[in-house]
Length: 327
Image 1 (cartoon, rainbow, N blue to C red):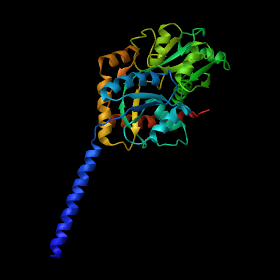
Image 2 (image 1 turned 45 degrees about the vertical axis):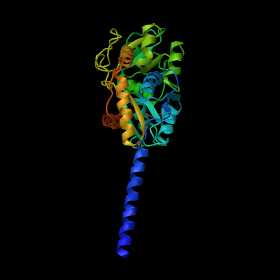
Image 3 (image 1 turned 180 degrees about the vertical axis):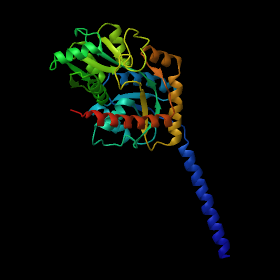
Image 4 (image 1 turned 180 degrees about the horizontal axis):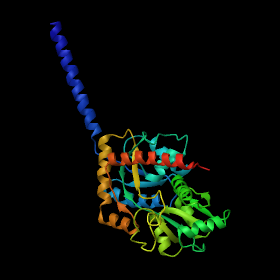
């Protein structure tokens, strides 16, 4: 009788556990998303990250069936907004959009980040790749990188460049290292404010993503000297590539990332990746990105993670070779 009662008790426990498991599973599989999402752009409005964030948020809102609201959380080269997302609940409702260069150069140049760039965030996808464009204000009497280098050596204390984050600093410092250019950094909270000052003539040189600078060059407000990568940009056929100009260190163009906290459930991360890739291949999104000099990528989460780790390793090697440090 005791054995029968014990067996009956165990049966009830087992059934109860199964029902609890089913209930929890049902809760976990409730429709996602069921409330608005936040897309954190960690640099100032008006720059490339902000432009891409607003393009993506509009289309993702329709795809996900919930509003995707862009929030600019600028500061410390993008690390303030990145840290905010890293410490957000891993529920799929707070996303980060950031350039791969900014994310990975921050990991190298900041010695005491409040988050681990390799572990605390999960890359969802590489969105699009676009080159960077070296520009000067039209008042500067140069039409090539060679002439800019010569002018900087003739006026070693005069020339300056605006940077909108660590990636801009590292990109420009690498250019200085490989060409012998002499130029001083003026830091900003994003490429948007730096571009405004460059157009106004307060900053001589800029080396920003082409998405933000292309309209300014086409309008004659800035002059393009060189575009990163192995080939010229279709939109600027008169501007040589860095490979063509014989400038080392800029052979490949890496794009923009979307990330979530690393503990985000795999099913939610997969849903987000699926919608991101679908949105990127919409004709209106693909066409707009192409007109701005970007090429859609839409990678898997695994591919994006590999690229992030490779870039961190690459920038660590650049810093070791050049001795570049944040000022």
